[in-house]
Image (cartoon, rainbow, N blue to C red; front, top):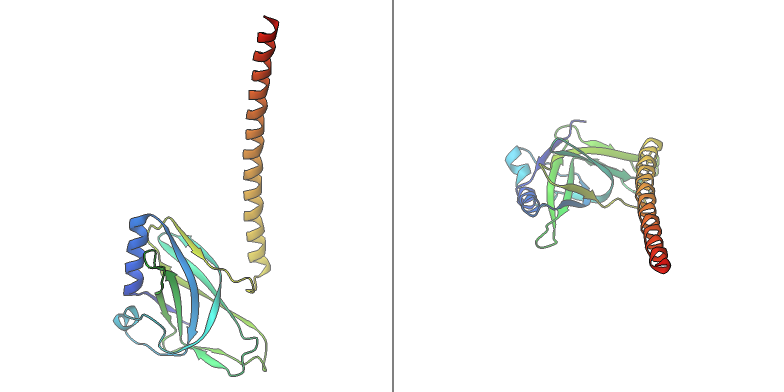
Length: 196
């Protein structure tokens, strides 16, 4: 499965807006399709999938060196007819108009991925789409509450939550000590004033 991903022309426009505003790049939705588009310039010119079949879910994103690995998931539960996935579209929010814009168009080229109907087997397919994000301050994805995560992903998420809680508790403890010091100083000043 050789997946080639292209930053679209419209996606580049949004990226420049986000960089200028020093904001976050917000991925809003993912789609799977069976259309075939060939050639880099044709892929970059896309504003939608050639033949959309269904929506997919985001399950996370990882940033590294000006690129983001966007994790896309599709579960075939309820799928009556199987299909070949040949294109994936990642959409972002335009910070000016709030419209959904096709940011990244990915294609499997000559090796599409078969998704079987639910009657043959119920399973989950995951795709890692790597796209350019340059030096944006952050990347957010709308993670679906119905998305399935692996134990490894859950462990990483729990570790991140634990780290955040520990950081907040440390800050709270320091704030509490600062307030206790201020109260003790105020009480000492009040006692000194009362004694004079």
